[in-house]
Amino acid sequence: MKHTLTILLLFFTLVTNAQVNRPQEPKAPFNYIAEDIYFTNYKADSIKLAGTLTLPRNKKNPVVAILISGSGPQNRNSELKPFNHSPFLVLSDYLTNHGIAVLRYDDRGIAESEGNYKTATSFDFASDVEAAIAYLKTRNDINTDKIGLIGHSEGGLIAPIVASRNKNVAFVVLLAGTGVNGAIVLETQARRAAELAGVPKLQLDENEKLTNMIYGIVLSETDEDTIKTKITKSLNDFKVNNPTSPLVPYISDAMIQQQLSVLKSKWLISFIRTEPKCFLQKTTCPVLALNGSKDFQVLPRINLEGIKNGLEIAGNEDVTIMELEGLNHLFQTAETGSMQEYSAIEETFSPMALEIIKDWILERF
Image (cartoon, rainbow, N blue to C red):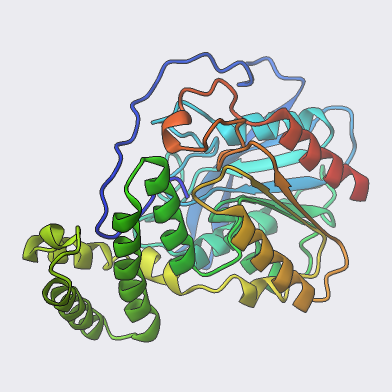
C-alpha cells in the first residue's frame, strides 16, 4: 500500500517531491531489448493496457516475470511521485540484465492504459494480469511455460488470486504481500504509522477501538444502508459512552459523513473483506515471500505468518519466506521505516533484496 487509510486519526502529512540523486535508476542505452507493447483485457470491455517488455539480448526464450503494482494508481515504473522513486524500473532493469525477461505495465486508466482505475477492485486488477499472461503466451521469444508473477503490496494479494486459478503460473514472488484480510492490514498499518509519528498510546488504543468497530461492521454486513446506519450509531454511541476519550472532539457529524464517503470505495470494501488465505491455500507453484523488518504498511510478522499458513494448507513444497532486516515497505534500507524517510533515502531498491529475487528465480528456471 502506498497510501494509508486511517479512520479517525490524522497524524502525518506526505512529504513533497524531493529532488534527490537516484543512482540506481537506469539510463539508456540499455544492455537489453526494451519493447513498448499493448495487450487487451477482453474480460473488461476489451480495454487496452500499455507496458514495456524487456528481453535479455543473449538468452534465448528466457523465463519472464510480470510485475504487479500495489495500491494507488501507478504507471509501469511504479513511479512514486511524492517520493521520487521508480522501483519497478529498477527491478526490471536488474532482472533483465541477469537474464530474466520482465513485463511491466501501466495500471488500467493510468498513463497509456485504458479503463477506469477508480471503479476497479483487486479482482479486476487480477484480470489485467491474466490478460498479460495471455499476451505473453502469443510471443515466440520467451519461454511460455515459465511465466511468473512478482507482486508488491496489494500486488502480493493479486498474484495469489491469479496463481490460484491459473495453474500455468510458473512462480510467484510476494514483496510485502498481505497474509491477512484488509481490515487487519489497515488497522495494524494505521497503528504503526501513528507510533512512528509519536502519537500517544492512549490515542492509539482509542483509535484502534473505533477502527475495529467500523471494520467489524463492514465485515459482517453487506447492505450499504445498513453499514452506514450502524457506523453512524456506533460512532455516536461511542461519543456518549466515552466522554473522556481523546477522540471525542473529533467525532462530529461532518467527520462521520467523511468516514461514510470513504467507505463508498468499491476497492476499499473489497480489500477489507478479502482473505488472502482463500487464494494462498490454492497456490501450488514455487513462492518467494519477502518483507522488510521495518515495513509499517504491511507488518512482516502477521503477514508472513499468514502467507506461510496459507501455503502450508496448499501443500506447497517450494516456499521461501524471509524477513529482511532493516528494509521498509519499498525495500529501501531504512532507519525507522517511516513514510517520511522514503524520499530522503537515495536507494530505490535494496541490492540485497534484488539479488535474493534474482537468485531464487534463476535457481528454479
